[in-house]
Amino acid sequence: MRFSCLFVTIAIAILILLISQLLLEIFLQDDSWQVPYFQSQNNNFFKEVKWPVVLWWAPLGGIANYGTVKQCGQLSCFFTDDRRFQHHPLIKAFMFYGTMVELTDLPLPRNGSSVLWALLHEESPRNNAPLSHPAFLSLFNFTATFSRHSSYPITTQYLKSLQVLSDLKYFVPTEEKSRLQREEGLAPVIYLQTDCSTTNNRDSYVAELAKYINVDSYGECLHNKDLPLHLRPPHHLDTMMADELMDLVAKYKFMLAIENGVCYDYITEKLWRPLIAGSVPVYIGSPTVSDWLPNNKSAVLGLDFKSPKDLAQHLHRLNNNDDEYNSYLSHKLTSKVTNSMLIQTMEEREWDVEWSERGGFVEHFACFICKKAHGPRSIAIATGEH
Image (cartoon, rainbow, N blue to C red; front, side, top):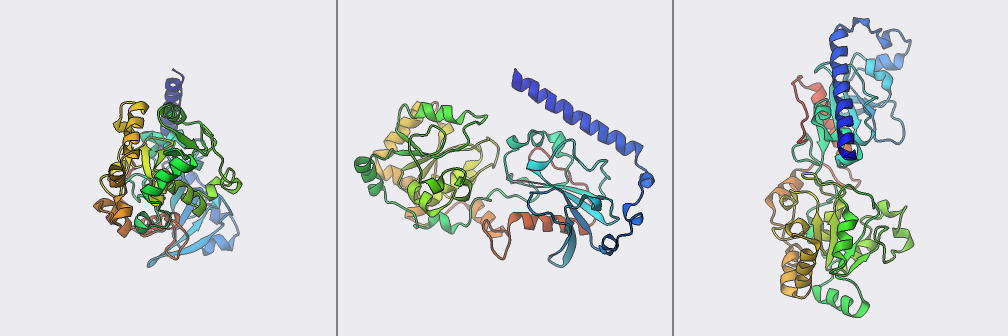
C-alpha cells in the first residue's frame, strides 16, 4: 500500500510539473520579456563564444567546467556547466546526468525544439524515481542509457572487450575447482554484495538458496567470509575488476549475479565479472540477458527455476558433472564468442570502458549531442524504452 501511495505521489508530481511547463510555455511563448543576459553584461568572454553552446545543467560532478571548446569530428561546440550560459544566444542543448536530475531544478520553460535536452544515465532508474516514468522521459530529445533502444546505447559499459571473455588470464580448470572444494572447503557458489537494501529482496532469495547449497558470501550482505582489507568497502568500487578479486572469483564454479534492478538490457559488472574470470554466473536481472551472453549457454538463469531449492538442485547436478558444467564455459574452453549481436555491438562501439585515446561514453555522447546541435532540428522524444 505504501509503494502504491508513493507511486501515485510521484505520478501526480510529474503531472503537475508537465502542466506547469505547458502553461509557462503558452504564457511566455513570446520570449521578449527576457532581458538578454549577455547584452546586459559587460563580459567579453561570453561575447567571444561563437560555437553552439552545450550546457551540462545537471553534470556528473567533479571540477567545474566554465567553458571548453571541444572538437567533434569536423564540428565544434562550447561545453560548460556555467548556468549563466542558458541565456546565451547560441545555446543549443542542455545535458543532464540522470542521478543528479531534480524535478524542482529544470531549465523551464522548454524552448520548443530550438534547444535540445539530452539525458545520460548509466544506472537503473531505481536510483532516481522520476526516470521510471514515460511522462518525465518525454522531456528529453536524446538519451544515453543501458537500453538498446536509447539514442546512444551504453549497454556494454562494463565489458572492456570481446577478448576478455575468452582470455584465460584468471581461468581455473574445473578439476582444480573441484579440488578446492574438497581440500580447502570452498563452497560451490560465491556471493559478493555490499548493497543489502534492494527492492527485489535479493538477500532473501540468496538466504533461501543457501539452505540447499553452500554459498561463500564475502560482501557485507549475508557475510560469512572475509575479503582482504584493501578489497573491502570503501575501496570496493575501485577494485570491482581487480586482479586479486578476479583470481578469487575464478576459484568458484558459480557466482551469484543478481542485479539491483530488473530492467530490459540493464546488465552490470555482476554478469561480466564471472564471465571474464571463468566462473558460471547464476544470473537474475535483465529479462533480455540472453541477448548479450557470449554463447547460447553461458549462464544459469535463476528465473528459469520455480524456487531457490530447484535452482540449488540444478547447481548440484552441474557441480557433480564436469562435462555438463564445462558446457557453460565454451567461451573459455573453445575461445569462441558466437553471439552475433554482442559481436556487432562491440565492433561498432566507438568508446572504451577504461581510459584510452578513443575516450569514454560520456565524452562520445557529448559529441553525439554536439553534432545534433549543428544539424537541422527534428522532433525526437524519448520514450519508456529509452
